[in-house]
Length: 239
Image 1 (tube, rainbow, N blue to C red):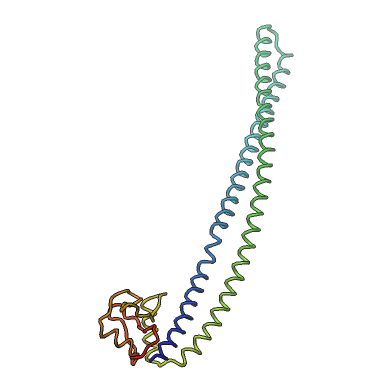
Image 2: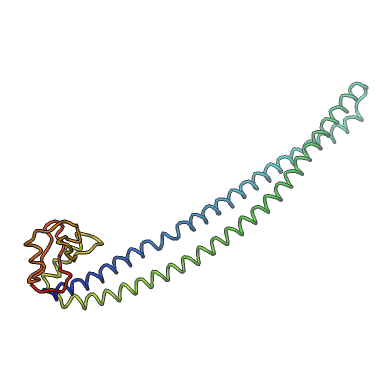
């Protein structure tokens, strides 16, 4: 049975390595989450700036329409001046013209401010787009790197899985089935553990003296009554 235990330990080391590699495969894509979130945030920032620029230009266009309307009104009023006969009507219309021209001037100042704001917003957009492109480039590079790492891990898993198959051939079928059942139930932990200080190193429960003696004899596969793991005696001594 000592030979079977040794072989089971070899298979176990391979299985634990496979577990570790498969865990790594699952974790690798998670390394992209931060970069993906950064790219998404920068895309949203660019979109928000473009929307702001669109609003500025729409407001500017509305103001320009209002300016043109005021200019048309001023032109109409000036034409009407020639047709007026009373001084009071003339003064009243001149006052309307002055108010329209003053309002037009104020709106033109607002349009100028909007144009300057649009220029600044376009600069902000270019900066944001450059930052987005850099983040996208970094993400693509990292994606390629992780893809290559996953492929490398795949190759390693395949290689050591082949090693496991060769190693498992030399193990008694009953012992191998027992080991695999325990491994399946316990998950990514050891199914074959040592007995140290009369204690199972899987669940750390104290073993009955008779069980310890049977483990030391190594005449048959002995399992822990508490956790059902396969036990072995790690010391070189004969009973």
